[in-house]
Structures are given as structure tokens and as C-alpha cells.
Length: 124
Image (cartoon, rainbow, N blue to C red; front, side, top):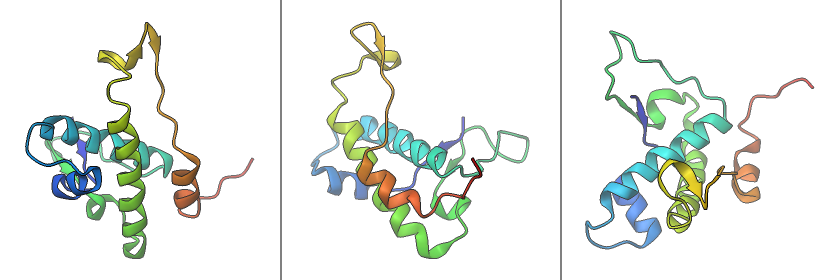
């Protein structure tokens, strides 16, 4: 499975104010989740697994976003989404369920506002 990581573990830990390695595995998973949410919102083209793309490939912003000047905006949005996911990590169990109901992550208005200008316009 191809993983997205738009921020490093060190950046994430600084943003989350986490010291030590106790939560590293969880933070890495949340980095990938937050990056995927941002990529989905921006409708980024993510390569599929193929003979040319190894199944355990990790892609960063530089690998899939060509507009250099926007990378900081994407990184900031990813950190905000990561903070949301990390803060609510106790609210969901395995499979994204809470008390037997599916939980869907919705981007906050702040993150949407930050990213809105980067989305490709679409016709309604």
C-alpha cells in the first residue's frame, strides 16, 4: 500500500507537543491518514501500485505536488488535520467505529479555507 507523508515525524511531534517515542507508531499512522485526507480534498493524483511503484512506497509533497509555492500551505493543513485526528484518537475504535457507528472525518472549516484556493475549479 502506498503511504502519503506530507510532514515528517519530527514536525508532527513538535506540532502535537509530544516528547518521547511512546506514540510514534500512532503518529506515523495519523500522518499518513491526514496526508491522505488532504490529498483527497485537493484531488491529487496518487500513483497506483504497479511494477514501477513498490507496494510500500512513501510519497511526500514533493513527489506529487508540482506547485512549489503551495507546499507550505499543504504542510500547514496536514498538521491541522493531524492535530484533529490525534486529539480524537480515543473517540474511535478499530475500523473507525464509535459505539457501533461509523465515524467519518470531516475537514474543519479552517482547513477547508486554507486549501480552497488550491482546489481545481469544477463546473456545477
